[in-house]
Structure formats: structure tokens, C-alpha cells
Image (cartoon, rainbow, N blue to C red; front, side):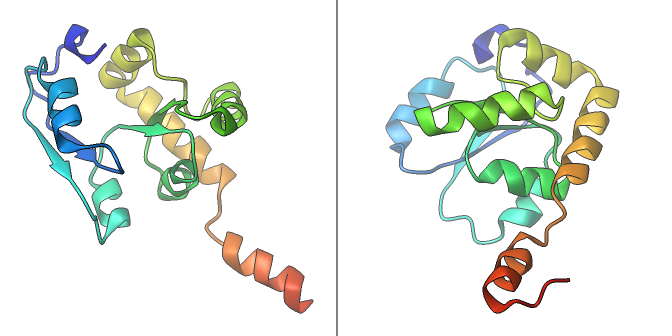
Length: 140
């Protein structure tokens, strides 16, 4: 899919999970854009804040992207991610990854800004404290 998008002026960072480097190198080999594969990232928020557009599996990273206001597209890689991907797309926060959605978001800074503000409105960053308050009875 990415080989069909004009990426000549784009720098791509791949945050690697369990996928092997050789598999990722092959997947990105048709790109006409520089890319790097990063493993064991220690400061994810700083890296994400330096991102114009993210493509993420529709897992828990989506909530971090929302909290930080990073515009993103989702890719469902497991059955348990389907619901989150649909809800994020329906809410106008993170469309599912398609060639059209990728081109649209890459070429429309206003759409990325709206996605960013919608995501930040959804997640306030206080989830851990809210859950702990349920256990301790200290509701705020």
C-alpha cells in the first residue's frame, strides 16, 4: 500500500514490536523514503510528540496517541482490536488505514489537527488515577 503514496519528502520511523527486522526491511523496501526501525524505545511520549501522523495497531497505544494529541490511522492486527478501531473511526478520531485515508491525512493538515483535538477530548490522561480511586474509594 505505501508504495502507492508519494513519500519522497517523508521520514518514516517504525517502532518495532516482535516483528523481525528482516521482515520489516522487506515490507518497507519498495518505499522511496528514508526510514529507520526503532526497538526498545524508552521515551515513547517524546517520540510520538515528534510525529505528524502515526499508523498504529488498534490496541492500547491508541489511547496514548489520543492523550498526546497525535493524529493517527488504525490497522487491525488482532480480532480484539476490531471494536476499538471501529469506534475510533466512527468518532472521527482515527480512520482505519486505507490508501485513501493515508493520502487524505498526509495532505490535509486541518484533518490531522481535528483528529488531534478529538483524540485529546476523548482521553484526559488520568485513567490510572481514576481506576485506583475505584479501589481506594477516593473518588474525585
